[in-house]
Length: 156
Image (cartoon, rainbow, N blue to C red):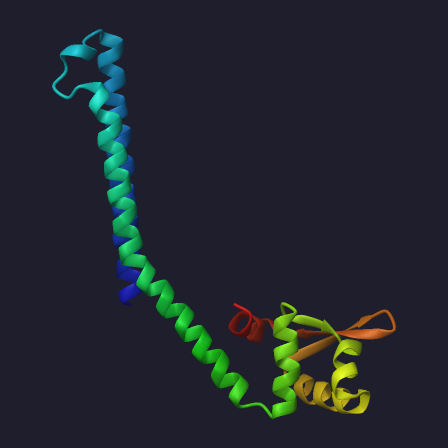
């Protein structure tokens, strides 16, 4: 729930910044149209650097609030991937790593060159039965793809 609170804070900061810039722009435009731009309490030439600095400050706060959460999320994803790979047989792990290296899909003939046709076929069938991968016809061979759930975890 902590991430939800941080996201709300970030949205409030950005919304506040947009409101302040919009209101100040309206303020400046009104004074320019009335011809009192030089006599207003906040000089218009000061508005641009003020809001640029405020934008950098808001951006820094957003980065400070959100970046640790993103790194934590990436770390959890990497740990999840390691746990999943550790549960596999070494030859299954080899095939899954090859699929991951090829962005979630690989041609079966490529795998067969390394492990042999029969061994590759058996491993692929085992992984397919467990729902980790699926096969699609691809010319005279098959394209082996990770299931979307596993692709999300392993290929990110």
